[in-house]
Amino acid sequence: MNAREAAHVVAVIAAAYPQWPASVETVAVYADSLADLNAKLTLDTVKALILVEDRWPTVATIRRSYASRLGVLAPSPSEAWGEIVEQSNIAGRNAPPTFSHPAITETVRIFGWWNLCNSTNMDTLRAQFTRMYAETQKRLDHLMLGNPGQLGFHAFAEPIPTVALPL
Image (cartoon, rainbow, N blue to C red):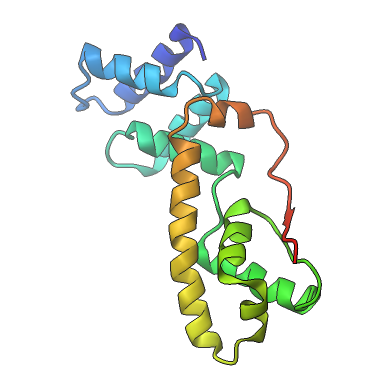
């Protein structure tokens, strides 16, 4: 987004939250930190946040909500576990599983597909997987959100392809 578009986004936030103590420096930081995003999608994201947030959205909140709208953030731990269960039923232990996000694929690689498919204690397995997955999810989401240009790149890209895990 260009400087004029960024200024418009910041003006919308300021108009919606008149108590926002936005200094010239604050406005510059917001504009600079959102510059890699698509202007229309950023404005739509800010308008949606205004409807549900009592306080002005931080740059991080805007970027996370923007990424969520694009569908590029990793699924929740419970959604990831659901994919594990589904793939163990579809692919079984001898076929390569396919997952919707690299965070799931990475966690399964670390944990071991064989271990996931052959455990006899599903409650413990789920707890261990969920804990391990949450770390991977956080790391990959932070890389996506904190890397200027990554989100702007995805604004017009296809959804993240499913990823097969080699055996």
